[in-house]
Amino acid sequence: MEMPFDAFSEVSDEALLVLYANGEPAAGRALTTRLTPRVLSVASRMLSDRAEAEDVAQEAMLRLWKVARDWRQGEAKVSTWLYRVVCNLCTDRLRGRKRRAATALDDAPEVADAAPGVEAALIDGDRMRALDAALAALPERQRQAVVLRHLEGLTNPEIAEVMDIGVEAVESLTARGKRSLAALLSGQRAELGYEEG
Image 1 (tube, rainbow, N blue to C red):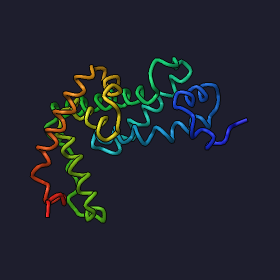
Image 2: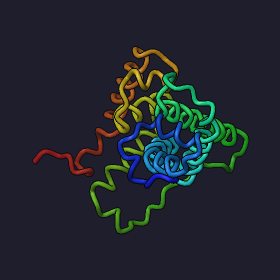
Image 3: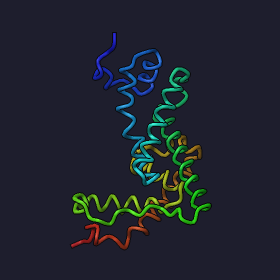
Image 4: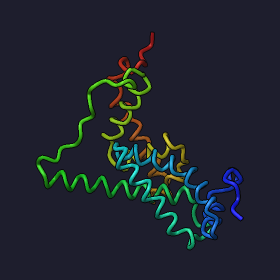
């Protein structure tokens, strides 16, 4: 008998994965609903391309389902494993972009549509676009660390596990990333509505 979807709201990610592996499709749906928005958010920030981020999120979730039967409980958190997969997939795509850009003169990065839309009038939309642009300007590892720490709320030890580096390296990357972001955004304070009045 299949359990109702809302029965899984208090069940851990790891338990949901084990239930899914044991033939409980509702557990898989619950885990998908819980994790997909988080991995899509990370991929979107890393890649600055929603369509490509959706592809990465889908691929990461497929990889999770493939390892479900072989999941070794207690070795890693499901979310940490999934963040690592997403970061690796994003890194692969970013490297692919660099290779394509180096081999094709006409392969320039897409320029955002400058035509103002309904959302362009909202100051939060402007702030998010400025943040996304500043994040895109950061070196890849700094961007990963800043996104995981300050936008996704992971702890430094969790980020260290995702990125396969030490906690001190995470602290260094996030500190340098925050300084770079502050410098990149400093000239935009007034236009983004942060001017003291």
